[in-house]
View (tube, rainbow, N blue to C red):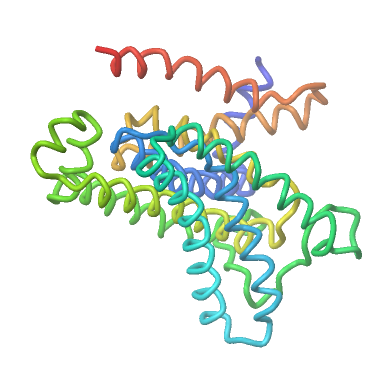
Length: 304
C-alpha cells in the first residue's frame, strides 16, 4: 500500500508518467462519452472493446496502405473510416432492438465478443508484422504519428480534442432540444413515445455516435500511443470507459475530472505492479473494485 501511494505521488513529478496519465485520460474521455450517451438514452453499450479494437485495426491497416498520401489527408480518411466502421457495429445492435426486440446491452456485448477474436486472428495471421515478436500489425510510418507534447511520454494533441468533445457533448445534452429528447427518452420512454419523439431517430443516432466515438478512440490510440495495432490493446479501455461514465453520472462536463481520476489511479497501479514484481494485475483489481462500488448506487437509482 505504501508503494502504491508513493507511485501515486510520483506521477506528478515524473514527466513520463504525468504525460502517460493524461494520455490515458484522453482515451477515457472519448470512450466514456460514448458510454454516457447510451446511458442517457436508456441503453448500455457493452461493445466498447470490440468497437475500439475495430477503430485501431482499421487505423493501422489503412495507414499502411496510404503511406504515400499526405499525412493530414490520410489521417482524416482513416479516422472517418474508423468512426463509420465502429458506428455501424453499434448500429447493428440498435437495428436488432428496433426490429427484433433484442436487448441492446446483450447484443452489443455479443457482437464485441465475436469481433475481438476475429481481429486477433487477423493480427496473428495475414496482417502480422513478422519482423518483431509482438503479435501486431506493421508499425505505422513516423509521418502519420501524432506529435508528442511531453516526450518521452505518449501525450499528444488528442487530449485537447477530447476535452472539447466533452464540453460540446455537455452542451448537446443539456442545451439543445435533441439532447433533452435523449434524456427524456432515457428516463421515461413511454412518455417520450406519447409525446411524439421518434424512437428510431434517437436510438439509431445515439448508437451510431456511441460506436463512432469508440472507433475514433481506437484510431487515436494507434496513431498517438502504440503506433501499431497489437493483440488485445483495447482491453484496457472498454470497461474503464463505463467506470468513468458512471463516476461522472453520465454528465459529459464531469467526464473530464472522472477520466483524469481513473487514469491517475490506474497509472499508479500499473507502476506499482511494475516495481513490486506483483504476481497479479493490480490495475484490473482496482478497476473491478471501482466498477463494483459505483454500480450499486447507480442501479439503486434506476430501480426507484
